[in-house]
Image (spheres, rainbow, N blue to C red):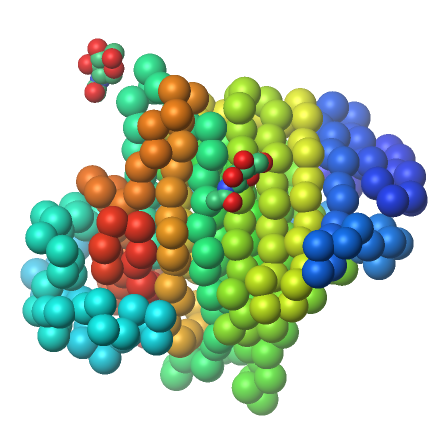
Length: 310
Ligand SMILES: *[C@@H]1O[C@H](CO)[C@@H](O)[C@H](O)[C@H]1NC(C)=O
Ligand SMILES: *[C@@H]1O[C@H](CO)[C@@H](O)[C@H](O)[C@H]1NC(C)=O
Ligand SMILES: *[C@@H]1O[C@H](CO)[C@@H](O)[C@H](O)[C@H]1NC(C)=O
């Protein structure tokens, strides 16, 4: 249990956590480009969220949704760039991406050849803005994150992102977190996040066991940088940009409805400096245990895509 491993922390401009399993991290925080007092920043250990990819719970049915790009979904920043008026999920002549199904993930997953491993994964994305899904109990949740591994290298996943919860009265709250599954998971309580906020997550893993995460709230001017050592060894063969119906200690959480979540300027970089976006990436739809597809995604262009709730 992770909670017994917390050995020490030092409060100063730089905070250091270390755990018996040797995973340790150093954090710094900035606001509007200036270092901030780390006493305002708290890392609260959480139970691992089991964010690894799970396969679809059942075989796809015949009435699977088409992967048409929904014509009503246009990010304001893209207005004027789309030219297809719907009917195609790629407006720049790229082949549609392969679609795969997951019981908990929705978004995009890019695989690389292990002869040239992933050293960085990046995206800008919006914090899920939730509405209660009819017929399900509250509270309901959705998480959005960027990660390395977790798809084909199933035993480990280095990731950071945000989770939003909506209560039975419609009230929402959101928080940022990072996790090096299966080891540490921490919420970052000093990094303010509200539903709809634009975030960026930049994860560097230049070796299998050490990583650097920069998570920023672009709208509120905050960023937190973590340098992590001695994590569980990564394969560095998949990068993901995901909205998730995650698992907590009690099982899979009720998945809320949400406004479109855009992932922009998605990229991965490899050890040899190759940079890839979404070309050839798997687009992942979420199919819940009763067989309903509750979330779809579509590529907009080589580095931008949208995830929407169904
Ligand atoms: C991976 O890269 C190696 C060396 O470049 C090559 O021999 C191999 O065919 C590649 N594998 C795949 C699946 O592309
Ligand atoms: C991500 O962070 C690394 C340094 O840790 C930096 O070199 C790189 O430019 C950053 N990527 C983006 C897209 O900001
Ligand atoms: C699956 O999604 C459908 C459609 O939203 C919903 O009615 C059903 O309750 C969901 N099932 C589970 C187990 O979440």
